[in-house]
Image (cartoon, rainbow, N blue to C red; front, side):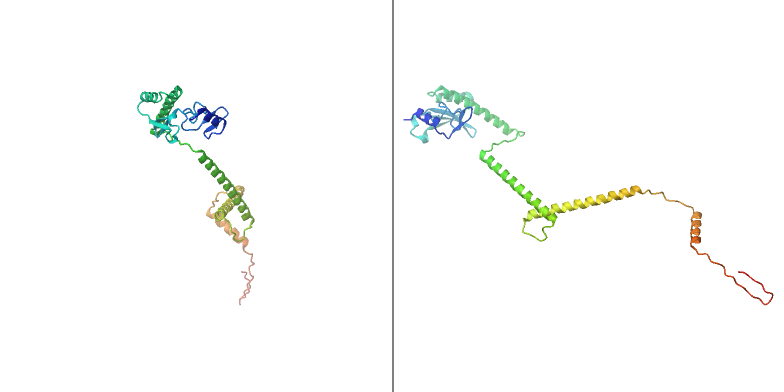
Amino acid sequence: MQSDDVIWQVINNGFCSFKVTTLASAFCRNENNVTGLCNKQSCPLANSRYATIREINGVCYLYKKVVERAHLPARMWEKIKLKGNAGQVEEKIQKELEYMPEFFKAKCKARYTRIQEYLRRTDRLKNDPNQPILSAKKSKVIKREMKRENRAKQVALIENAIEKELLDRLQKGVYGDIYNLPQKTFETVLEKHGQQQEMESDVEYVEGEEELEELDSDVEYLEEFEASDDELVQDLEDIVVSRAPSRRKAHVEIEYEGPSKELTK
């Protein structure tokens, strides 16, 4: 015969895989627990007579356990589908749990009401296109994603360190020949090195333009000088006369048969 007190003493003082202890109280993770608390009255393992409400695919079922089926663990729970409005369901719960303690009757009715509330709220959120669809992640999935993120961060730090070291060595001219290096990282470093050289050449060109602008600012340009034609001709004559060498006239004597005359030409 099943002894509820002995089972509860073992579970309460020993180990239970469904028990979750916190600083305030203890909770139960068993899916058949009607309240979710870990105590003798709510424990589905330490009570030979028990009843609870469960929701499966949007349909509520009444699960009932009696002591007459304690020797048949596979058939210990009786599953009863609940359909109809709230009044009809409460009447059915009251009828099925007629010989159960009042505690299970009240808790099953309250649990059914709460399940119907969140089912209606779920349907309303599904039909509303503006509401985002939220899904809970399992703890294993969260831990796996965190490990992947940490691993990716470590790999990124290593790659950045390699790129920095390669860039420093390229600038120092260490790699005169081709070495067996990661191709992707090496190409990335070469691209960065080329971009830096282009930036330096652009900076030098801009500095040269600034120097030319400073020189142009020191020189003042005058307007075009417009002179008349006579003045231009006079200037040209002065230039030619100043540049031409001065020549003496030759002295020529001419003799005639008649009286002599001295001509000077």
